[in-house]
Length: 421
Image (cartoon, rainbow, N blue to C red; front, side, top):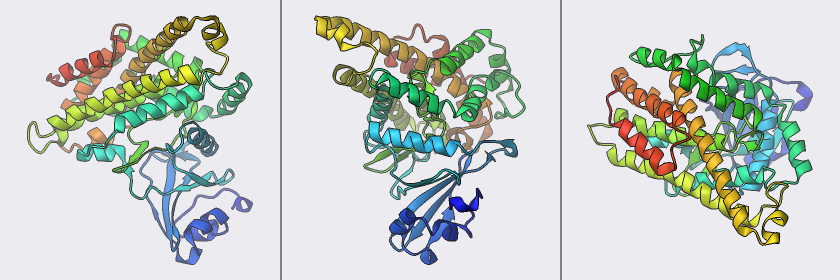
């Protein structure tokens, strides 16, 4: 395909253009018998499912612009390269967590990867009220393994610095995060939108100087604290689930940043799903048990993260930070444990701040969540979103004082019982 120069795929051109790729033919069979359908429902890319006599694959291709907006917002095709590089690293750092990659074409900005035919997007499963066994634990393990093993706690310093330089090239997608997440929700940005009924809350939040300072503190951390390789866009739309398997997809926003970012983004999306449950209930209280389950799984994310981070700290701390020769080798194991607790406390504090701004931008910014958007009744949707806005504000502002996940979830439960409109 690379001999043709970049061109966006279509259903009509896909078999002929991909037919010469050996990895695709090996898994699909002869191109003449392929069947393709376009399934991309995200903000940026083309995504096709291609089926043939021998099997099926997913084909993902970047477009030279933001699909949600159109050609007026150009975007470099190089983001596909960074997604591929992140997928390779995630597969090595947490085997089985990411879809297998069969082929990558840098010029065509195209990845051919495993088709997860038994899976659905996690956000869709949550809207439907499905319970996924081991969900929070699996995602907590993913965060701990990828974040720890991509940092100076584990990697050789020269390797991590080379990786940092590589992913610094993903500047265009960082720019999207830096503006759409940390700045635009707190001003009257042209592409912002929100549900009718939230005007007063939106205006109040944009005038909240304390919250604006927190958002900029978190933006500072995101931009300057290159602690580890992040997924960069870890939400419930970036996870696919089946009855017995959980995979993480779409790391095209991968960059180096603070460990708390991925954790905080993920927790925020679980809390938004929690807030949305009354809007999906057929009768008052019909989703209460499921909402409780969502909070249990949110707690499981952090519990598993702490447990796995602790295990890795004790068994794989081979990088230049907190070297064992400074602690355990000198009989100072307790000092290493205290340092571990301090690191976890810093990650938790950051995670709460990132959680808060993510909840705000998904309601007041450009890119919204289906958790809320699929609630047809505007008044019910606004009521659910109002609670999420307040939970995000309180958690972000109290990130120095909230001692643990139990306290954060108690805050969420209390605010979820209020009428804020």
